[in-house]
Image (cartoon, rainbow, N blue to C red; front, side):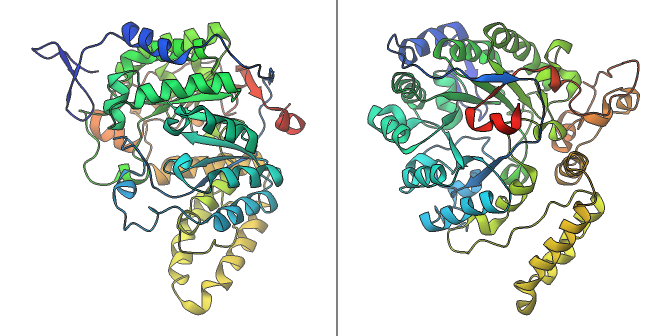
Amino acid sequence: MPHSSSNSELTNDTGQNIPEVQPEEALEHALGLATTSDVAPIAKLRSTKVRRITRRGVMWLGQTCNLRCHFCYFIERIKTKSHPEHAFMSLEKAKKVCDTLVEEYDNNAIDIQGGEPTIWSGCLDLVRHCRDIGLIPTLITNALVLDKRENCEKYLEAGLRDLLVSVHGLGEVHDRVVAQPGAHRRQMIALKNCQEVGIPFRFNCVLSKSVAPQLPAIAKLAVATGARGVNFLAFNPFEDQAKGELRSAENVPRYSEVVPHLNEALDILEEAGIEANVRYYPLCSVDERHRKSMYNFQQLTYDHHEWDYASWTWTGMQPQRMREEDVSPPRALAGTGALHVLRKPVNTLMKVPVLKQALPKIHGAVMGKIGGLRDKDSLYAENARVRASLHCSYTYDERCSGCSVKEICDGFHGDYSAIFGTDEAEPIATDTAIRDPRHYISRQVKNVEPEDEGWAL
């Protein structure tokens, strides 16, 4: 947690001093910018406790951004113009990715992100294309460009469904985290514009060290501005954050530092009837009443607003995130650890020119045949375990062996445990072991957009 220095300032996640502003004071200023009495009507959504595998896809347009969030998964790609994923792709390639998501993966919604998608010249045209092909678009955005009302109007007219706005703090805390003075003010004005124009939005909030005391205030901002949901995301070492020395106890908070504020924020959202989700925290870290909001890898696939593992695996491959290279052939989902091990020799053989075109099709066919022998829920659950154990080196404390929910909890990220250890584990005891990843999340009420009602209800 940020600590007071001798001159009554706070030290933020990058070691810089910032003025000490109490969360409620920061909230009052934010509300003065973001609230309006001229709120456009927005259709009320139906809700459900049914949990089915999501049909939402995701794409990365290129790692070009107008901010420099210190916890960004792609921070080195954003800083390095020569990186093959830095530049935005062409509109034609972006459309091809979206067509594949519909035709090959049966996705009916998509999260479009950059970098920052709203500074890409083709964004409005891509939103229109997505609507035309039945792939309902959401933008993951810092919303700075939307501080101009006419830009909001253009996106609404183009067919945008909603926004996922990156609210990583209030006031100076947000500005320091994203390394851009004035970013918070512009974002709050954008929220006001969205309310007046009629664009629904949700919040993403990364649980960095300096934001922890502000979590209840951010929840109150969500209530006051009519946000449809809030995602609280662990500061994890995915992608570029896994390299070098970007993460330490100076910028990564312990779970125990965050959770008192997080529990309070979740209570505020619960009382207001706003959906809240916590990504990548151990199930034991929050109060029992909030475990319905906890999404580890096994739970993610049952969140309507998260990404389908099959299509996510494909769009996450570098050819689908580069400007220059054409898209690669679709691949079926490999679920088991044994299948995952095959990726290394397959990637090696892909370097042989004569095999480059044929091998992905053969590999995909084999994976499809094997995957087809299993029901989708078990295939996705196994893939989730692969992501946690092999991709992220999640680990358990020795006390976790006696926890009744160990089978549906990823435990502690390997990077986190290397910094802090695993002594925060508090085994959960139930009458029988819990093996269904939906055990807690099936108690949560989730929003369902009209386009999803046919499969999600």
